[in-house]
Image (cartoon, rainbow, N blue to C red; front, side):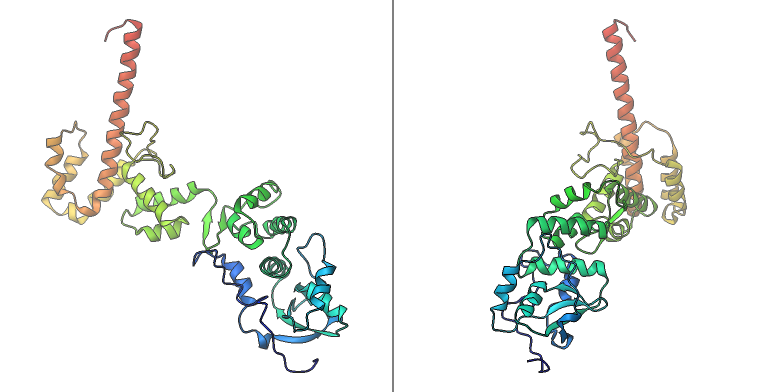
Length: 357
């Protein structure tokens, strides 16, 4: 067999088609994990060669208890050709296939079929974990927990879901493992998710960044805000709505959006009226029209506003400036509401103390 042309058998599907994980919806795979799996899938006949067994180094195995001799013996009983083992080219260290290597030694083979991989030692270990989870003798729970702990150290910026996908665990288990390293690992401000996107660990950071972008340019598309702030489009939409209503953009989505019906609703930091008015005064659609100048004068006045009053100017507001005007109106309304609430509180105190206004 040695020296003959190589034909890699595929009946057991050891390494072929490892990227096809039907348990995950399309587009939700961990990109790094799929990249590793793609290395070993498909037509790799030209990447394999027969290598002297004595030239190979033992794997940096994720198996805490070491190799299972009985499994190697069982593989040695198979007459058909086994898939190639995976070896890191730079070190000649086995990445995946130590049991097949053991079977080859039992059969007194001098050479074994190898598929070489060009990767660093960290990636070699992760690939070893991924391949051993997907085929052959399964890793035990202890093995997978230990592997997740090591990957967490190697990739502290990877998300819990990403590491869980690689190690065959739940994200909650990985989160517990990560907490065990508190104070000993770097604390990144962002993490790389399973979809390959980088997101802030603290959602408040991304929400505030989105809030600032909306203040600078209310017409910024939501997808652009989400991409630049590292948040989802849904979160960007929620921030836009809260900014429009004058609410704190860091409040969670489930927070009621109507400040008039939410006792816990909080305003953002005081609205910068001069800045908003400055932008409005520079807007050509307002600055160079009689109706626009009338509206600017009306808006600049401190007034008690009745329905008939605002009805006379609402049609003068350019659609692209609605966002700013809504913020001013909402925050002014909230300020008056808080003023009224404080007066009610004082009136109650006076009544209880027997005083009169």
